Length: 67
Image (tube, rainbow, N blue to C red):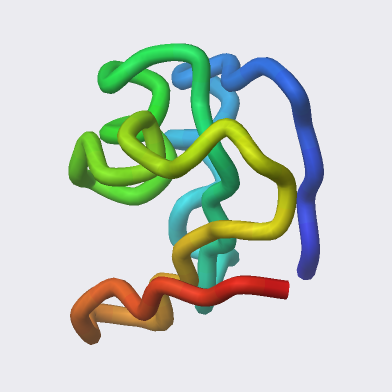
């Protein structure tokens, strides 16, 4: 299952959490949004240039990538 959104509705995200085996986080507008997606504020600190993101698979540590 792959979900995509520009804005996170945390209530809906929480309901779907058990169905998601991985998450991809691009640069977010706030540290709070990053925590909602990835559990950490790291996506908020990504560079403004396109192409950088984080992959979180299960309980493993985040993997930063550049596309």
